[in-house]
Image (tube, rainbow, N blue to C red; front, side, top):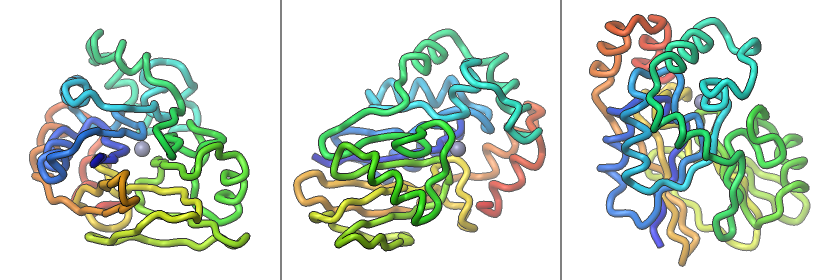
Length: 240
Ligand code: ZN
């Protein structure tokens, strides 16, 4: 089975469409949360994911839009984008988001937004945090988003190594356990403005990372017209 794995779409429809076009054909679509928040297309993005029968978990921005978590810890721009989304999102999209769990297990993989042990909040950014999450993980591997940066922690013989995938990077899974971040679709933060996503071949264990250009100006124009914070649209030009 060929799986397309995406995360942190953040209501960026042009980026999602470019990614799905580039990764097609795939048998299944896994989505690691932060489907909405920041961007101007929440309903359109959810409609596309429903059409693709996406297997998804919720992220902190999704939970904030639904009113399930407090936005006090969000910065001002993030909070105003959450409020903008909560006021406009349609009932169908809201219900679909409400049905999403915080974690789910698909074959050998635990899917979560932040981390397997703290799916809404924790950023999986260091070896000590990865170590605690390997101890918590009930499947051989985990997949997470939240940082918007592609990254793998691989555990073997008691040691954990860090791998930073680039465009076209591949990794074949073996007996060593991995915590895998496919990188962000709708708001990359590693200095490359192209959308980032990953494919998985479940038969061979082959992971491949892809950088996919999309019309950034299209979403920036729409964000300006909708009155979303200028900083949120400007950063899309730089991937930061
Ligand atoms: Zn995010």
